[in-house]
Amino acid sequence: MLTLVLVVIFAALVFEFINGFHDTANSIATVVATKVLTPGQAVILAAVTNLFGALTGTAVAKTIASGLVDTDVVVVTSQVILCALGGGIIWNLITWWRGLPSSSSHALIGGLCGAAFAAAHNDWAALVWSEPVGNWAQNKGLLWKVVLPMITSPLAGFVLGIVVMLLLWAVIAAMVRAGGVLRRLARPRWVNAFFGKAQLLSAAYMGYAHGHNDAQKTMGIIALTLFGAEASGALNDLPAWAGFLHPANAGEQDIATWIVLSCAVVMALGTASGGWKIIKTMGHKMVKLHPIHGFAAETSSATILTLAAHFGMPVSTTHSISTAIMGVGFAKNPRALRFGVIERIVWAWILTIPAAAGVAYGMFRLFELLGWA
Image 1: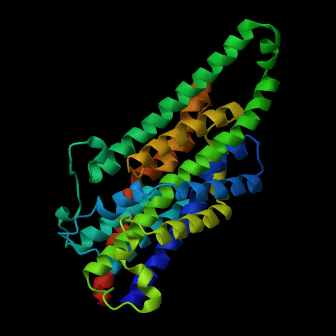
Image 2 (image 1 turned 135 degrees about the vertical axis):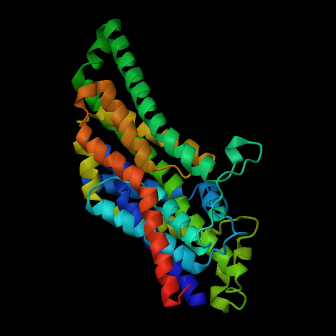
């Protein structure tokens, strides 16, 4: 049983690595598209900021570990987690191969739901749909932590992208009206130069926000694995070298320090490996970007991710940055948006949770046929 637990933890870290290179584009596509940084420089910036972001919170991890699956209805065994990860990994690789910026977050959540549903013998009660606790920000369940953010975060990204873009243009227009030195600084050449520097900060902010939200999801999966292993007795007789695996060693925290550090480092390594297919789609195919547009999109998306992480919502980085880019492009010129590309991206969003859930469900059923579950 200990071997299986270690295999699941390894699979979780593989998912985190894939999440890193799959979602690298979310952090750096705009800064590469605007030619502020080379792809290599952008990847290094994203890896470092992802690492720092991943070390600064566990609210989302706690949601994944305890807010989506009812452990009183279904025992979350290592096999369930392994199938959940399998669903997420397979869908991530498919969309990466096709160059589609789908959500790693929703792939993981879909995989977890599909595997838990299969393990509960098709009992919907295994999934926590809604669990209000008085304060909406602390409510648990798929409705509060997944469905509502899945709808609101893309809308917020789109609207905030438009608003930030309009505010920046308003400032530039005011500088033109003021005349003198300010008017000269409002010329396109100086605006591009300024936002070329400012975009370094917004790209770093985006990388931090990505790590702060996305890395926590795998932390939650590992914690859930250990809770399930403890409940099944798999951790009763741990050898001395494996004592760190016991959830009790986390002290007063639900997520042990070693889990946080492992996920942070692995995501940073995955980010450093790049994800050029998706970068091309995000940064070049949806709309032509200049530094001011990249700054607006990154700032808008990172703000949404940081706020969501504060409330423990596993929001999709892909959704927030994609729609922020769309919002900036819409503010620039609605006809500049390439709706054929956008349609493919939206379909990838719609299919992610059911597709990953279906793969995970099928994997668990296969495990049962083989006598592994």
